[in-house]
Image (cartoon, rainbow, N blue to C red; front, top):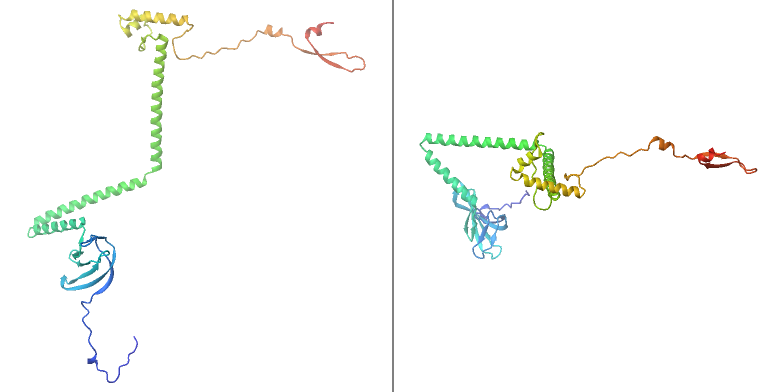
Amino acid sequence: MLNRYFPPDFDPALVPKRTNRKNLKCEVRMMLPMTVQCVKCGEYMYRGKKYTARTEYLEDETYLGIKKVRFYGKCCVCSNAFTIKTDPENEDYEVESGVTRNFESWKLVAAEKKAAQKEREQLEFGDPMKALEHRTIESKREMDALDDLDALKALSSHMENADTVAIIAHRIAEAKKSRQVAATEEDKSQLEAFRLMRREQRLGKSGTTLPIPAAAPESATPSSMLETVTGPQDASDLRSIVAATVSSLKGSGKRDLDPTPRITLRRKRRKPAAAVASIPRPTLSIAPAPTGLGLGLGYSSSSASESP
């Protein structure tokens, strides 16, 4: 601090006194602590909106020695003045004039909790057994909450240790296997339907089909098998149908009633050794060359080499 000069004739009593600055309103830059709506123009000013406010300490309104503070502001659209003040009892703010506060559910929940706590204190006042019962219920509730928390932690740790790649690969393999089984079953059903269709075509287009009997014993005869499948009454009709179908197939050159194709292997016939020896083979012969022409080479058959 700089030194000041005081003249010899300085009289402190002549210095004017300052006014009381306790209720002096100062301007501050602050944000709205809640969402409000202007009562004049209906503009919404949301929580966190910055505005310039004038502050005022209220000497006559206190809570446990804490003074309340009033804030003066203006609407950002119509410049309508509004006032709000602090509420140290509920750790919140109160709207006084100029704006209305939007509904907030958490305030309702807090009020209900506060009312329940107050009612409980009134019940427990002068009744130690009631207070003990309430404490027992609370302790049991806390233990249940801790058990649930431990279960959630164990589940979380199990999920963290799980190999997700292996699980996905296992599920993919199971899906692939199920698709293969379904495809195999479908192929079998289609093949069986095709065999039945071919069998009906071979037996004729009259619509009468020969049912497939179960495996019969070795001592069973064709007549007994027909009677087992169709009954003694229709056995004669079925025998006539089968006989007519077999005769028609024999006439057309078909030997087998089975629709499944058969593969036969045939060996290639070899010629006998005598026939192979009788085949003439070409031989190399050297003929005398004429005079002055050197040697001559030529091929001749075995018959030519035997001739003189």
